[in-house]
Image (cartoon, rainbow, N blue to C red; front, side, top):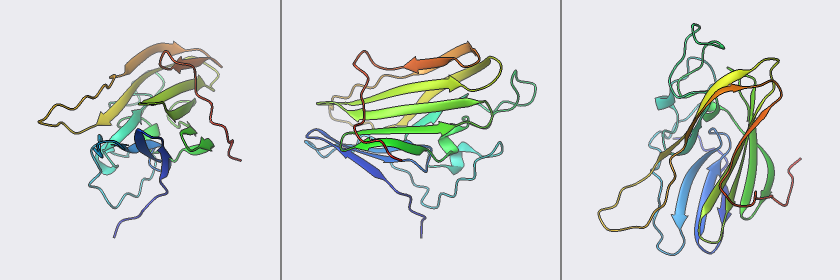
Length: 197
């Protein structure tokens, strides 16, 4: 029998989206409320017991849905500038804290352990789509480099299904002390209406 973690659902007339904060803040499901199609591959690992650390292997996690890879994708050893980094980075294996929530918006935050990075994301439903806004802040005393990748596992259909996904991989040569990096679509940044204490 698997260990079930709390899932938070966001819904509107077009989509139903599920997020699992304890599993790296991953988006575990995106379902069309019109066609009832599930767009994301579902995890077959029903017994997740994530123990964050440098030795954690990505394949021992959910390996499904939309997951965050930061500060890198591949394993880095102590010869890497800034020191070692685990497989697929820190954030897929961390429990994220919910900072605000409404029926169509969720804000989460987590602190990295291999680099002094604070990673925030706001997931919001638009009229007929999903928007994710990211903010990464260096909390360290010196500049640090990183590679960010949004890892998504989705189904392929033999019949035409309209889907628009932007692949995202961003490399930063250095995030200066106390500086912030933003990535967000060309839309107004969503605000979740209810802060969580």
